[in-house]
Length: 330
Ligand code: AVI
Image 1 (cartoon, rainbow, N blue to C red):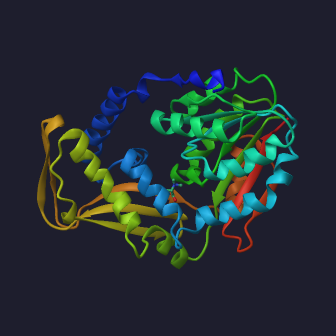
Image 2: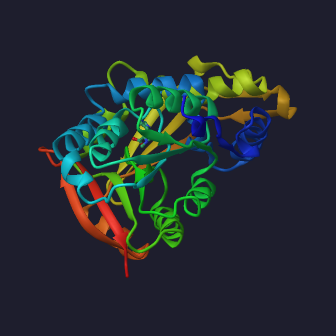
Image 3: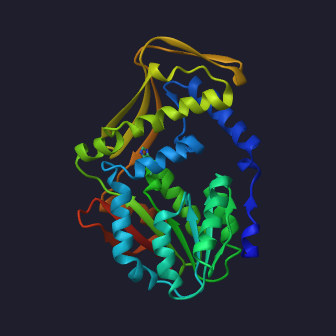
């Protein structure tokens, strides 16, 4: 095994205790808020990550298929934008299925250093192990931390050319000002010649979006409800999952899918680890996720706000999704 991979940079917040503390504090404040809310960041425990992998394979969830199509069609061309010896930081790599397409193309030009950044250290270790077996010429230096801090480890440790990769339209889970602020922070850590490759989902007809976030097999519903199951597992909650329903709404003006868990009746839920009870009215909702969709103009404004310049943009054949290569404004 490549000795470099044994060294995982690991933040306190990603330890089991650290994650549990953050989750408890999120649940305490989110369920006491009006309206109630829980951050989508907490979807991804082991069960949630497995459900998300299933979502990515659904016929209705076109995002993964469209982005994979773009990568398969253009990976060689994308790789030509990078000199050999590039260091690639990936935000939220997950199981790195799509990443492999790009890494294979980059490795044809020469050695590559891959720095997956994720709060889930188990997933990171597993991904790193598998990638090393598949690509003996790849150096893998995982960082278990949040994205901002992960990038602040990555930038100074990579003196050569750099690429920050953020696939899957995860940027859509931030609100628009938050997305611009995040990219501005990332850009400030990079040199002007470094690049950012962003997968961004596009605005489209509400029907397609509503199907993608409320699939017929109910996988997205289970993914959403897993947040309550996680509270039961980790914080001793007594949520009855049958008493809540997965709801979505597409706000066409804001260009965002909103996800909620709706209480089916008046009820009180106790959470032992918090020594607290929370009341729900019939029909009351917990907001769990926003997923913003972008027009091309909105992507341009996002780039401008982050001092990035669009260098190239690729689409799938149906123009459902976009892959955007940015570089710093000189
Ligand atoms: C991870 N993120 C980009 C997904 C999305 O499409 O917003 C999460 C998701 N939520 C429901 N389905 C998928």
